[in-house]
Image (tube, rainbow, N blue to C red):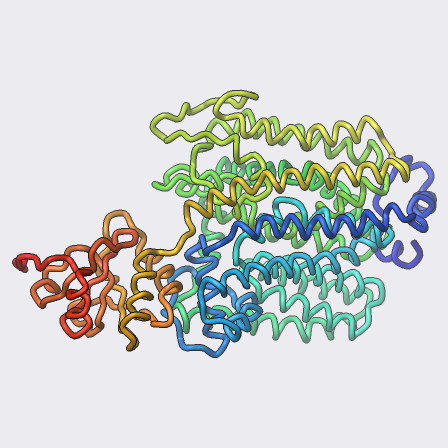
Length: 630
């Protein structure tokens, strides 16, 4: 293991009486010169990860997130040098993934083709993450083939693979995080100015991927400050790069949203929620999110947490310095506070008119950092972590499952709305969720293996079973490590394939092309001249979300750029998209397209040559009697 083992304390193995040197020697004996089996296993694991991400991505035909996907796609269209798109509505998103997607619009103008290319680009980013993750895992004492298997296993987990079904920032965020952690390990091994600069740049790039990554940047800056205890020159260089560029990245991300979308509100009210929420709500959010991470990782995140605590203790007591384990712990703490603070409110958990199951066990914020814990846990069990480590993880998992099943689950809206990308780790168990409503749901139902609340208990069994078996076996040898790795890959692949039921369902529910946009595009192609189209924000038909409809229509209407108006009566557009009742428009001679609408929105065609042509084709509603305007 050599210098690498000195850089990061080795994963603890038993028996502890032989000391650290004995542990390193035995680990080196077990993993020295891996045979052809491990090398073939590494290649097979990467190929399997590619297949799983491709399977998930194959089901993504159209955007199903009107904000997380469409907004980023509209940003990318603007950043490609194209025409200013219709200003998207939403909380705003940081631009790094949009910058990466921008070249897509140089090769196509089709929104459908652009989306499919963006999905493919996401698969490439996910598979590329295996490389820095492998390099980082080798610092834990594994040879390259074993580390590749661990990295591939992490990327095969539903928490990572499900994200390939959406054009969101998650793939780039985790790629940047893996590169940042690798840079931190290299900096800790040899604290030089160039390595400090690379680490700082990686942290800044990480910040540009999402607003929530700012907590990770803060952890990196604090770590650089403490690195001064080892090398003040390296720390100074890192801080000189990270602080100004990180501040610029955060400021410019918000500024771009102000310019394109009119505002930025990601992460608002987190501190307010933490201050004002009842302790029981904070505990519920923490328990739900911890359970989702544990159930979604086969319990490996619990092993990783135990190992992380040991490594942090060693850094503080033996190394007498703040090392990479402390950095990872700071990242975990920061993102946990952010995630719990975002969802631990009475409004989100109990009073929302739109009841969501994922609000009770939200995983998307924590997933990138906990994926590093999963890698740490998987490396530990393959290196032969004994009963002491795995047994503690089993005890923690059993306690968490007990609290979740007996206290959290009976109050949770298990029947509520589910967004797979928000709780991807437990989507293999999507088939167990009930199809009930709040009116029929039996509140206070303790989960069993067969009742309507079985989701919680069934999803808890695999991590308990795996950790119990590992605890019973104790330390595993070289052959046992290979068998365990193969079993983990097979089980994980099966879970990810099972999660496609959830992603396909969400695509059917929220995806698709709006009929109104397709009709506008047909008119554009049939009638030649560019049409002028405006979206009416002065009315909202029924229970429609006008921001959702605006974003989706703006993306699919092509090549015409849809405008937005708050006063339809002052609009001079040829076509206005709005409610089906428009007294002033009817009085002015506007007529609706027949039998074409999306989410309650209809197309009103103003008097002129276009209206005459459409009337001659029989595409307009009959002229209605004028409605008196009060």
